[in-house]
Length: 317
Length: 95
Image (cartoon, rainbow over all chains, first blue to last red; front, side, top):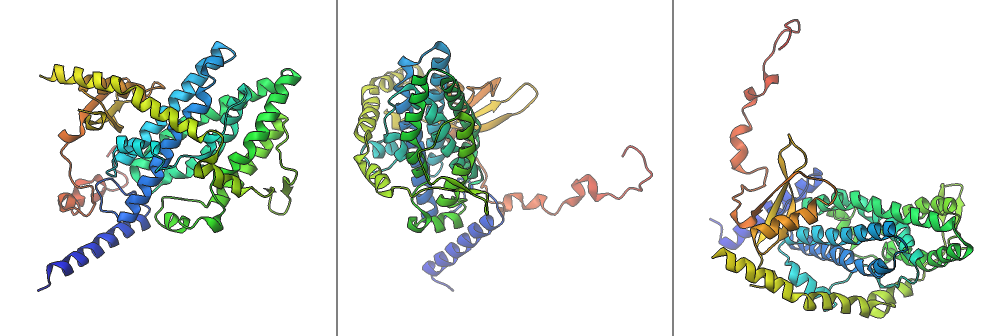
């Protein structure tokens, strides 16, 4: 007769084996399945960081809602910013299936114990930035997110399918906005060129550090949480974007950018990784402003929550 | 009750007439009515639905999702429940 601890060890091994077999068969893991603690923890961190990015990502473009140049542009921008809120909520909802609590995740964001995408710590200086964010930032996000529709964790994959469907509108409205400006006055064309100069390199940094400096990637790939390496996704983005820049008639700010005839892919210049490190560690141009505004949204709007709660309590009795 | 205590609702959307309601995700709301309103804003911004159900997650009784669960074993060996179990000559029409 075996002792209880041995039984537990045997049980754990059986559970792990079943989990591994499910992944190996290309099947999805669902919320009530047994999963290794590391898998759960890594997913919560990744999904929360992703959700935070959507929510913080409302701010740079939100700054232009009241200054949109026409009712059409304002309607489009409102719809886009509302989508970002929706994406954040889909993702928080996926994180909650893993046992996380959304209010707690928001607190962690505000206390800077969890991160969000470094890209949203840059300011939007002109209306051309709205277009460039749609084209480059959302374009990079799509590169990152399309493979996540096949994430091994069911609720995350399903959330990403919804997100990706909506993200396509984001990129196209941005590109169309830039096409319009590029057919405008020399001043408008200069605004686009300036915005592209400022957003190009940070967009490349969105894919994260180079593979050699991304120690957790191998485990995440084995778990089916991550499907392609940072460098591979970055390369795909560059290959996709260069022809789009040509149609637009803008010059990307990289003199080393050139098609490699042997591979059919674009070579590009060295990325300043110290900038990414600075921005991630809180020293980007807008880190403090972004967090302060998220904190204010939580605290200043608490009365709405309290009122809805009081109303529900009154009508329940 | 704070925001963190708002119950979790599971949301089901009927995409169009003639289809079943399908689970689309979840949200927190203070009561049933607010849950329906929030579900509309969150899950049907692009005409994805003509009808919404919300149900408190705590009120759902579920089987284990594990495929090896004995719950589903009884149907595993009953191949005779499928039409392909029966061999019919090729020249028999409409069957």
